[in-house]
Length: 157
Length: 277
Image 1 (cartoon, rainbow over the protein chains, first blue to last red):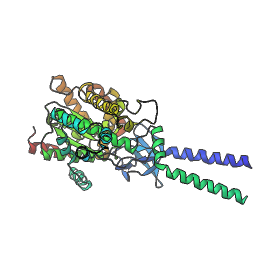
Image 2 (tube, chains in turn yellow, green):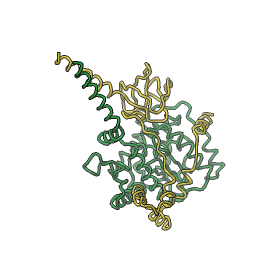
Image 3 (cartoon, each protein chain N blue to C red):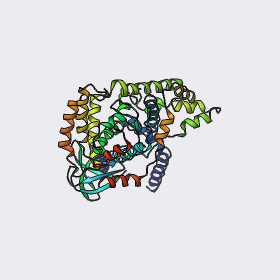
Image 4 (cartoon, each protein chain N blue to C red):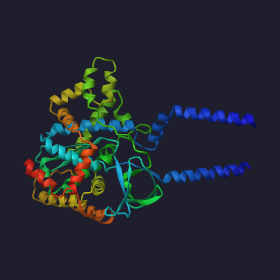
């Protein structure tokens, strides 16, 4: 009886591992699923970031996948075995904050975490080796998803 | 028998509670052991890339044209939405330089020079250049080239631990890593296989977004001719013949054609209006 239970356990474990190996997650904001392995194929679905698919076959670029009881083709570059991470953006307050907190004891640790101290940054700025002002100007360019969609729609005309 | 069941259930509950309690640490540890990137790795990658981007802008000034920078950002963000890195915020800008070139820094910073724009004939070509740079970021070519993740024997030592320490040693290591990254961008160039990989992934990003993946091939041919005429072409993206031939083969075999590519005529109008030519 014990032996039988052990074999059943091992069987379930093997099947689970095999199944888990075929499961992939969409890494991009969205990924088109095509009817054939080509970008001129018909788009049969769009899967959003984090969507789970089962990979059946794979070529250099294309993966044949199963999802929601459908089958289709997706670029394998957009898939990963791990779920995607949440978005992390540059923290503009890094420079200003480290300047404000100079007197506190935690300053050294914070500056270390950021790689360069506020003094390092100032020195490099004076020497003309860095330009944080221009960088912040770039980071301030705010573009919404609606603007991107409008841009893409207008591009079709 | 009843007692055994109660003991087993209690043990299971305790085990479950212990797992839940240390869930985050456990996930971080497993991620590092599998050579996966964690949120803290990505956070440090962005901080590292931000320093590199600030130094690029220290060497080459930003081209102060808000309309053009906004257009490049719209195009870049549309392309980045079809890349595998939805975990970072991408930023795009034009540099005021007479050298034909484009650059990218880890963590999502992409730059193209004003001179490079002069040789672009349509939006698919521009999408090809930007996608190529996005691909260097998605594939973490600089981070991998610097071998940051594998510098210590302990597999737990990740990117964040390497440059994120609070010690003077960590600060020196950080500064050295930034210098090495700048050497790759301005002097040595990426490894040939990294360039070819970026070409392939860039073509896929273009096609996924709706642009002609062969746009970059047309642009590379034009730049190759320019380079032969000894024009001011950046030397960090060389070996045109092999790149063009491998990319064409890849596009024909794996990507295919886009029936109606996006942005036909739009880029030319923008250039004309902004008087870049």
